[in-house]
Length: 307
Image (cartoon, rainbow, N blue to C red; front, side, top):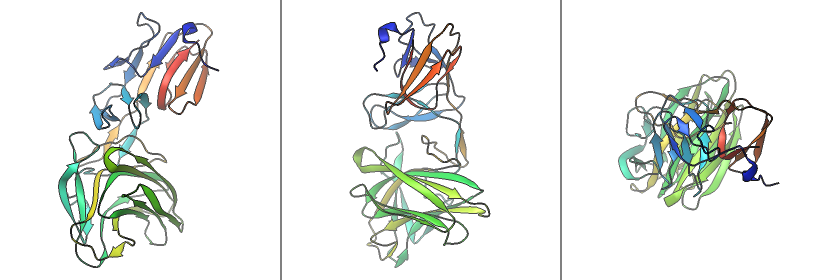
């Protein structure tokens, strides 16, 4: 049943804001404005379809694949990968591959994407980084675009028998294959972006006894082992590895890991009997009864209405 906003005592949408405040549509006197706390910068997709950084305590009105923004609310997370936009750096191991830095515009504002070009040598061609592991779930994400070859992601433990692999066709935006083998399991998804870019997302469940997780990005031309042409490859930007079972917004890094603190968006001083309904981007709802302090749930919130 639709909610009658005329009867609402509090209405919050992805509308006006300033640092530290998300303005309410009702009441009109400002008493329903939400306080916004996040003691680090964070990123959002802006209305131009670019990922941009917003300042400390600024709420994030996110336009990912939509013209109508949602309020993006996330918990704390850390990007465990260094040099998330610089694959020429020695932090990343290149095998039978070279990196051409800053090759083309990327979905990240003011950041150009690198191109991985396999050397003209028969065999596998990849960029790799190994990360210390534990008995937990990790989520990898990165932004990729067709540069002549497709992408094959591989995540392995100490033995090749234990791995997750994800092949993706960057030309037409379809999955090639998803492989789970041995003791490592996982899942995958992707997000299509403008100008032929895709954010590929893989969750890897690492069992106890695996000290490391090896993250490899292969050029793929019907197989990971082939003889390249010396000019084709794939574009990449925004590599991220989080120690959690789901992906979050992009966290840029340079020479160390970076943590984005949690968004805390609250309305205090609520009195009386009431029902507060959060409507998420997918139109699911969360109903909260009689809150004296309302703290916005994590997710992508379209509107908050209190009756």
